[in-house]
Length: 77
Image (cartoon, rainbow, N blue to C red; front, side, top):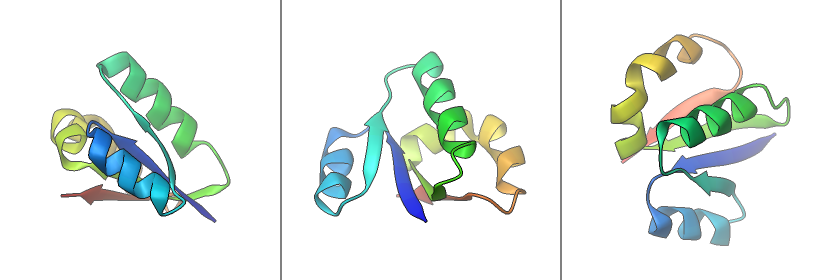
């Protein structure tokens, strides 16, 4: 099981990479949608981390996927 980060913060992304967690920095809605859907349907990803800024912006889109058992979707402050 792997973790993956979707971030709007370069420092958070760098810190997670130093801990061995892959991730992407997204700048707009299209990049977020692509990264999110790729992560949700990647069977190797068990925990999907999303920074708070991204979470607040796309909460209505993310919430239905939180009901699924896989992957666990977590908001980071």
